[in-house]
Image (cartoon, rainbow, N blue to C red; front, side, top):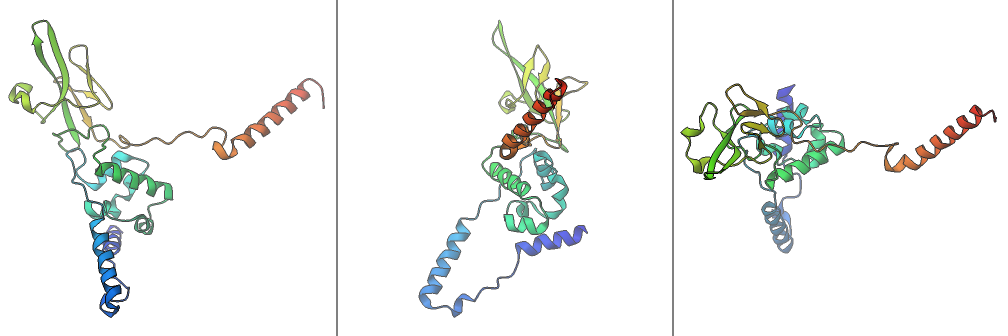
Length: 237
């Protein structure tokens, strides 16, 4: 089953052209067609490079949530994930339409460098990153503490200060406690964060009384039922 899905995805990417060969067109039409083709090629969205926290297709789909991880086998390469059109995603079985739209939105965010939590991490090993509290003195009475990401098993004094960068979304509470999304304390001090399904998910709003379209109708019928129940309780039928 997996092999057939990979073949299907590759077929969508390399589908042969069935249009009339441009050599059969009139010279002026041939020139226009060539210009349009070259212009379309220039406008193709760029495929962004993976980052340490998101090295492959499965991790990306896991992070953005909404069950998209189940479609990971339909994308044979990172380039396929960022190249397939909405129509091609539909042919691959990425349903319903709102799920495709959500995936396309996150693809664009990733291209623009708008990552979720952990997107700025530089040292990640098998989906796990270690965080430490770095402290220095601006003056003898003012210690400065912030959270940094270090390679697994590395001590802070083994790294030069210029290589220690602050991690967004995490802060130091007290002296050595790291607080932030998905931060888990470790035995040797500091914390770690691990790739978890839905870490970057944009949560859908909760519909109240059937959503915008049916809200007035639902509330009207509820009011009628409540008034009828009140009349019956008071002895009016």
